[in-house]
Image (tube, rainbow, N blue to C red; front, side, top):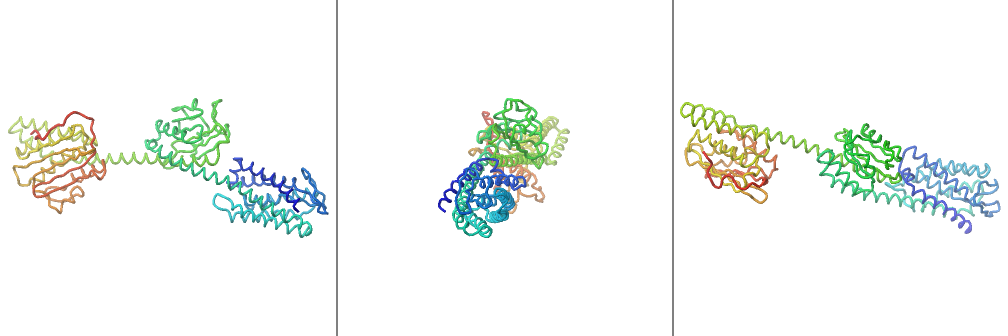
Length: 588
């Protein structure tokens, strides 16, 4: 019995060496992770070859229980038996491929054993099929996510599988043979199943760890490429993204296209895969046209017309926004064996994230356009009553003082020009805004001489950027509401003061103040009153929030001594030398 165990251990070594070599083959690892009929057929062929090898390397046992060693046991007298590792192979086939693979490998292994024994011992066909089905169903039930049953469980399945085989041998060949071979073959079958499954699980575990590392790399790449893809799919963003992907992955070349042209290509083949030229490869054209990912394992599958192209394998994935293909992400290898399922998963993750980044860029651009359109629409809502009053004033002056009428008309022209410019721009210089306020106040002073006094307290440069009408609206609001019933001593102070990297703009008056129950509503909602609706303040507040965020919203303080309305916005300037006014009055 011990001699038989040693001899079978040598045969087991052959099977395990072949198993180790097999698991190192990329094609086999891809097949065992594939549930298609084509993959199962390949597994049946592979494991059937292993069962044939197991039969050929078995140990012959004569009727008198004598052991006979031969290099290859091609034929066997009908009176003799054989101890081999066939049941081990069938067990592993069932665990790896399921009952279908296990059953067919058992069928073909049993048939070969019958042919090897000169058409004797037909029970081996039935027993081998049962072993394959048993381990197949058991392995499927015990299989864990991404890996096969634990090695010790596989060893137990191997023992049970061999016990099934021993039961048939006991019935059809006698107990004496079972006593000789049962213990060695059960031990060998359990050890073999343990080691075989351990090898497969080790490789699968390593691939999962590699995938985890590459998932981290995908997230890192996504973070690095986000600023570029948010700009949209163009030559500059594509080139930067390709350089980043090439630097942080093992791909030999990376390319990005739009629907017609190559936007960027980095790495091998860059001498003929040129930016701003038409897409060359048939593979890329097919992906762009179909919107489906494609993989090439041979140079001919890529379809590059350039005779010296070094690219031998490729992953090409569509880049989509709203289910519309706008281009392709291409990753190449110069050696086909480098393309594994890990690289395919990595590429798929990158493509998915890049599509999201491109969609985010489009959404942000659309949001900006909508916001700008809304802001400009709000800016265009100028109070028409002011224009009517100004025109009436000019008309009245035409009868009494033509010179003043001409000056008022020029100020009205300036006001119109500033208003039109403000509608076109979302930010203007402080100098332009103050000129707009001055033209407005000149017209008001023409209507009501010496009624108002405007004082500027500006401590910033005159090219700092401010929203159009931000001061004019507040000054107009003070003129209309702060000095009801007062004909003199009406003062308005305009302040622009820096605060770190921001500046505070405020318009303060010494008017009658605002009722406390109305302060929290100003700038937030339209109100009905005898002096106005507050629409201008609501529009201004919405524009400030749209441009700079909620921190820029209007801040209103009021008492019986007057009102102060202010805003805090980013300090932006081109660095011109001085301010317009320094604690001075506006010209009248």
